[in-house]
Length: 75
Image (tube, rainbow, N blue to C red):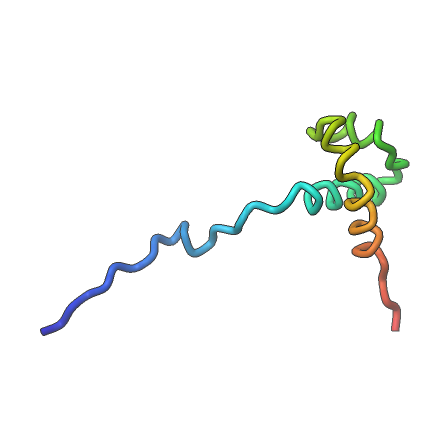
């Protein structure tokens, strides 16, 4: 006898897990820096939806991650 197994819904196949706040903040730091904006805590607060408490807690780690992602190896 032939039996069928249920298949996954298409939306479930393309769902990505939520990124951490540090990764999202690092992405915004890179975007602001690429646009020529000096990235400070005040600029990050004005141009994003992060609260000052989130910025104070995660800014250092996010800036280090953004700096690591911005480095290009030219071979």
